[in-house]
Image 1: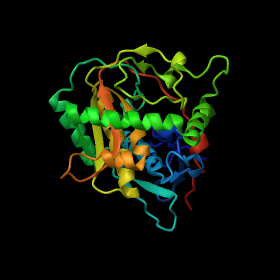
Image 2 (image 1 turned 120 degrees about the horizontal axis):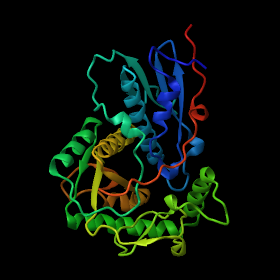
Image 3 (image 1 turned 120 degrees about the vertical axis):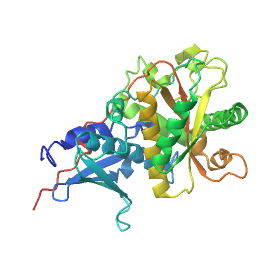
Length: 332
């Protein structure tokens, strides 16, 4: 394998940054291929890591790959090159979700803040209680702009609408717990990479605590509500929820939403914010339709993001770059 693609760019380092992205159930459904002659990264789907019951259309898979694509772009820019991306560049090859060509030089301005690269390594999902400290208006505006740059919209609903969205999320979590196929699928992926000790059970970082007030429906990653294995805590009384929205709902929109999600999350991390994802209602078509904003607004909900100030959370296991990086295609 070639150690460099172009001067200053180490493929393994860029892929390490890419795979630090979040993915549904930590499936990490991506692969990478490099073409040294064209100075191009190919970002491909790994369909064998898809979720047949939870994500039959592959929407969440595309969001996951979009998030890793954003990390890859940030890492390339950090290496001194301008990443030029194309989404779905080959209709005859549906597994090729994006290509990123290295162009330009470090002297050219980039579309991302310089501190986003460092935030890649600090971004973790925090399913712990946040404080009641409000998000400043300027920060909300910066997060909205980050989503806009990637082709999406970030909406902060008011308290009444937030309560409605959380109610839909709770209903989705209830359905997930009683759906045998989804429960088995969730358990299989959680156990697959973590390999917990059967005498100890799953790590607390995966289980997360239970909200004592029962108004913040966090996902139970065992796919069952094992209250004896959860720490009961009181979460924030007024959660801040942001809804990520795209105008259309096609594969390219899902990839844009994934990039917007990760751009927002990295920017939030750079500002000291924590985040966790409330994806449950998006996994049920009828509930997802109900997530749409008030009548008269257009758009399709792609993710609910809980934001706030609080504990950092813990990193989930990641596959090594060599496990997802195909052989570099050499210059001819």
